[in-house]
Image 1 (cartoon, rainbow, N blue to C red):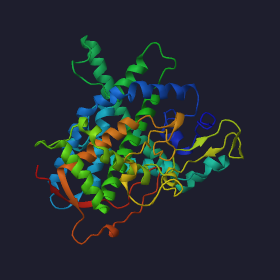
Image 2: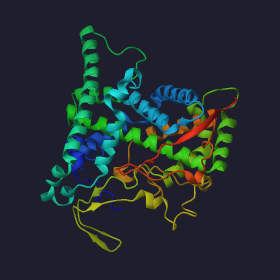
Image 3: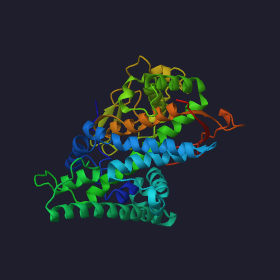
Image 4: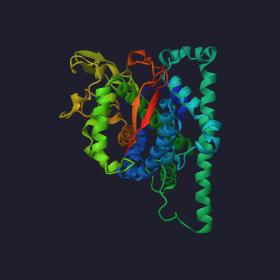
Length: 417
């Protein structure tokens, strides 16, 4: 009802620096520029056809994930392996390659800069609420850490852009176009748009980098957090684990070793599991804040223009007025239910809703469902000897997104197909 009035963003301190003065799609204030990049994301970067084109890359990363589990023998740091998978899928789609081979993952410090990113964006800055107090960030060290993190991202993106621009120059000099069968990654698409002649609003390289950071950070985090919490919940609820495994194995079967994405639409319980994970553990517990553009009366309260609005997706998913046994992991609640997480049902909004809903829902869920199905198909899982479900530390880290503080260490027994 009031979506348009509440669809701008406050220009928060950390986002201004990390996202090139908020010229990305997540933190850009409402206006012509945001409408343009949003349209670009929906039609060019994250369309159903584009997401489908990344399926071969997902398949490769799923296969590597399975091999890493097998190589870990009896004690598997599943959180670490899932993190590698999430990063690999995103980097293949966004940059056209993965960074684990040859030590590039460690050289760029992906794990560290992603952790710093989510802490900085989720942190409290006094200057965001009292503009005259911005100097406090200098004393606290936040500004120094923010600048360091920004420069590390900027250097990474400069290297990636130079690599892509170099390929484009060589093609032009050689008089050739794209090689047959060569798939464009998200950077290629953004550069195509940037170089187009009939733009309603031209993009700069900094704009391109801002959008890339959205994809890189948010895409990696969403997949990792959902899979990590999902496997944790299934290990704590062996009945749900067994039911999900039986469904996956009955559908795949036939001596096959890998799950196909074409199998997923038949896995109704698996999809219910994913919905239940999103309900209990939305990747961002409090959605990215909005800012009202005009004065609005909401449930009898006058909300002035330029008011910052926070939506608590975690509390909505656990509301006892909406959900029966809200603290219990119970995927069965979604069987036969029309409630979905795509922004139409306000009981479940892990990706937000309305104009500011996340445009990468299809990309995220495709990466999550195929990985979860393969993990359930390929292995039987249990906690290490002497560790009980109640022993698991469920404490969450602080930041704009929330994953468990402790890593998930498990025992995996290969399934005899």
